[in-house]
Length: 184
Image 1 (cartoon, rainbow, N blue to C red):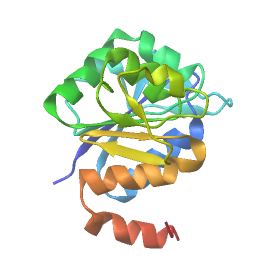
Image 2 (cartoon, rainbow, N blue to C red):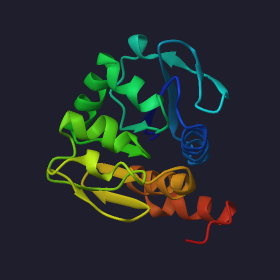
Image 3 (tube, helix red, strand yellow):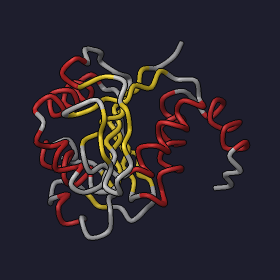
């Protein structure tokens, strides 16, 4: 059975992180929806525009995983959107996967209280924003319960593969790793 995954994009998102997750999770044959905040065409932090599948105000699913790419001012725009906060809290409360990369753990999850008592990582320089209630771990990808965090663009592939590990299984992920020539 396909799992539902929502990748939330707001203007200023980090393109590598978003597209890598979308691509790799679709290779795992999962139901990935690109959810736009503030429109159906979202402009990344480096000027690349992505057509979304649906706007957040019309998105009514409770996904098995929600993914928050980093990028500036993308993470700030995610945090300003009440519908994003509501969806992330609902996914977390249900025990489904909440995945954030780059500045998103520090700018979105930490202020929401989702990282309280959790181990997490984030983009270099954002560690203090995780607050005293989260434990910063200097690793590319950190999993603590249903929370997956990662450092940034260079770790996006490891992040996406780890999401598939938890969402599906290593049995699904291993052939994808092999085809991607991913050796880690």
